[in-house]
Image (tube, rainbow, N blue to C red; front, side, top):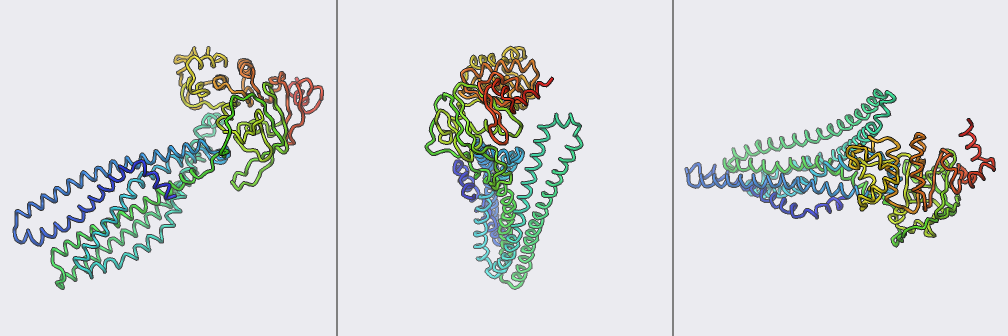
Length: 577
């Protein structure tokens, strides 16, 4: 994990080296100041050497001006480096998310993922900037001041250093508690974000069901949990900070007491005593800096640890020599396919098996409808074709190619999906249609909209294709969103089309418009239709009835009605009036 963290410094090493150089000069300036102060007190003031007094005072002013410039560089460009590193991490983790299997998103809340990408990496910026700088400065100042203190008074220096093991023991002892507390805080922040994201996305449902009080109570519960976790982390941090501050104060007391004794005995003079006190301050400052760094390190590395966990998630597995599927003809075959989802706790034990030994052949250009009770595996079957999930056994082939041997990019390029729950990106109508082909021309986008029976409506809008549709298309009706999604697939022009309950939530008039668009879309393509409304699939080339036991029936609409089986029962139930 630490190696991965360090690797993010490489693209910004120029700023990093400059920051370290500035820090080194600042440390040297801090070490140089007490020596000048000693000479002024012991030599120039008693002898009234005004020339040297003014000269060294001017040198001190110059040192302070140099320090001011260097500190500005450190504070500004150091933070710029940290922000850029954070942006690199956020870019990498977002790219990783694009490659994770669908099962990951099934098991992890959106708000928690967002918290890991945004909140957790925020503190990494401070650690990335201040961490190396604080360690380097502390090292230089500790070694430098120690050497100088030894030269002033070896016995007094040894007395001071004899107390350091106590401070180190205290810091190490409380480290584990701080790490645990900070991790718990991260988890609770993720839960608050997940609840907030869920509540905002479902605001219309909560308002419709007058669930305001329920949502407020639920949010308050997560909020209190976060406050409790944060309070615990602050308590541990306060114990650490208070303890370290107490030890620092005790060191001052030891220096004053022991130094006074040495001064009374004549072992050191007034200038050396003053110089020793100044160097003790120089010596204690890096210890305080290390205390601050330790708190920052715990916070930053806790966030980076959660980032690292995301980066270590297994991507969708791809064959090393995966084949590129050209423009598909559209033959699909399931051969003895078995599938089951993994358990939510991630222990990889199988849940209820969805398929076992499923075999099915769909010829190119044919329309096949899947019907049956909910939970029978219709949507799951559709998700297996583009490899949103991996089969547990058996094979699925397209045009004779085992889909596990194909690159996912070339496979999914040949498949278009229109689902009941349409997802539109926040943006304009043009941007959402163009998602089917990001290189499409304006004319191609308009032609796709015309085929989807949505162009005329778009032209009635004040901004036309540049109309902003709101988050997830909230400003559009269900039918309008559905037709935009169909236009998107027209633009993609896939060889295989999957229609998953594409018209089930629409009124009859809108359904007729969309059904017409879907019929145009299905022409010349292999089409798999999942439908509960049986009136929409009467003209399918084949209807397959799926339930918990697999394929129960298959045939044309007329054949299945004549067979008086499951399909006939479903059809008669829907049209019993």
